[in-house]
Length: 308
Image (cartoon, rainbow, N blue to C red; front, side, top):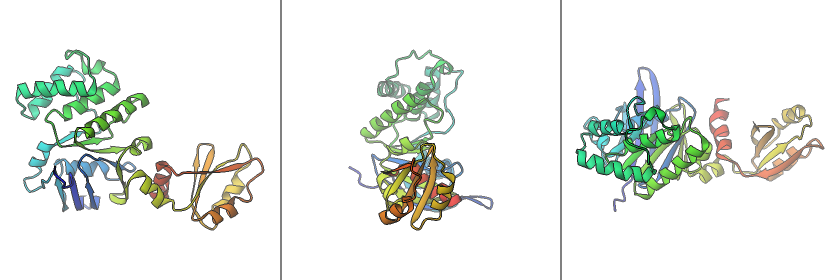
C-alpha cells in the first residue's frame, strides 16, 4: 500500500496580474481521506482546486498530486484525478447515455471499458433510469450524482468536488454525502469545497481559507478546540430587552467572540470565571446554557471576525 500522501502542497501561490488569488498555501491530504475546503466566496478554494487538477499552473510553490507535479504542464495529473466543477457539468439537452459517451470520448476511453465503468458507477449511485432519459428532466440531486459518475468514468485516484451540493435539497445532500463516504470506502481520496457547515462536519480534516491564505487546518473537533479554548454560552433573552446587556457584554473582560444566532446569542470566553462574571447581570427573564461550539462558530470567529 502506498503510504505517501495523495496530495502534498508547499507554498503554493498563483497571481493574476497584481492580484494574489492563493498565497503560499501548504498542506497534505492522506490517501482515502475526505478533505474539506471551507471559506467565504473569493477565499481561494476553487482556484486552489483548479491548480491541483492541472487546470491552472501555479505562479510559485510546488504540489504533488498522486506523486505527480506540474513539470508536464499538468497533463499527468489530469489523468489520475476526477473533477466535478461548481457549475453543473452535464448537458441538459442530451440524454444520460449521450452525456456519459461524450465524457468517455473526452477521456479517450475504450468503449468496452467505458460501458463497464458506467455499469459499475450506476450500481454505486443506485441509478435506475433509462439511458435515453433527458438530463433536463431529472431531479437536481440525481443530476449531481450523474455528474459525479461522469467525473469518475476513468477510475481516478483522487476526486475533486467543488461545492457539489450547492442548490440541492437537504435530502439529496445527505444522499450525496453517503455516496462520498462509499467512494472513500473504495480507496479513493475526496477533496471537497462546501459552504454548508453540516457537510464540513463530515470531513476528516478541513482547511479553512480566507483571502487566499490558509488560516486553520485540522479535524472539526481540533478547529473548535483551537478557536474556543474556553467555555461558550448560548443566551436566550426570552423576549426581554437585550440591547443594553449586549452592549455591556461586548466590553466584558475575557470575551473572545459574541455573535447572534437567530433569536439567541453565542458568547465565548477565555475562562469560566470570566463567563460567570459577565453573565451575572443577565435580565431576570433571560437564561444562559453552556454549549459546545459548532463549525459555524469557528467560521464566524476566524473568518467573519477577522474581516470585522
